[in-house]
Image 1: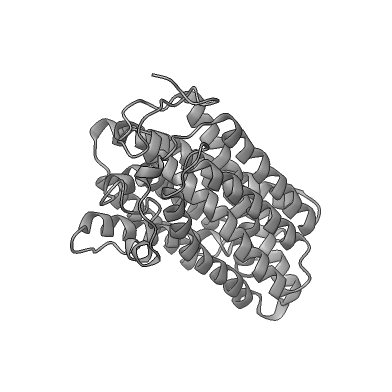
Image 2 (image 1 turned 120 degrees about the vertical axis):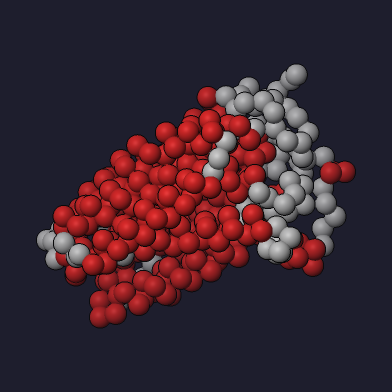
Length: 368
């Protein structure tokens, strides 16, 4: 069996076939590196830089303005992620289905981060953040789809665990850069460079499995739009997995998005930016400590649902602690609990969603 150029860590197979060969360590490592840069691009702005910009432009109603900025970006993400995923499902060419979207998404996302660094108004901040979401979600959709493309079911939770580690490292790296670099503009420029560099590590040295022209579904806008809807009555497992992912991520976002304002206004610490970084480090350490172990455990017993239930309960406890006790010790405790809960969920998330997709060749792989 031959391998594509630069892709010694994956075996060539039919693009629509269920993968059987284990993904090798080099491929998993490069995937993790790409995920680090991707999430740094998302979370450096979300944890620190956007909040700083918004507070500078609209200090009297910074919370509502930040909600406007992030909510508008989230709308772009909600639309863009499945659209990019569906388009990558139909992409043919020598570079495969996923790599062009990973490379293009990284370039657009990095350019948009530069726009944010140069922003002189809230309108430009909203525009820049929407472009970041559009670009990085193209990269996210294609990266996520590469896992069921190339990783067998028996290995997906373990690989998902390493991807979860990359996500966490990206959150820490993005927050650390935003905290350590002098100035909002320098923070955005540094993040843009990191997104490009880590995407190149994956794209340049990783091959893809090309989709033959005769395998590509005939394009129809109506059919593509209809493919975004999966009837929960016909596919209840997928519906529950989608809803669970939505709720767990909402809980995690509530515990992290407003940390800068929470620490400065509710807890009242003198240096909230450094406080955010400390809490993210605590959160990340607990997440990493649970993610890989839970993923291996889940693969060994072949079950996902108990881990999802546990993660939801733990995340609810963390949110309650942060809401009811606005003190520094409680914030640290909440970060510990939230990291454990989200780590357990992250370890089985990819495996769960890909296993309950209604059709490997007809439905978009990036729903939810």
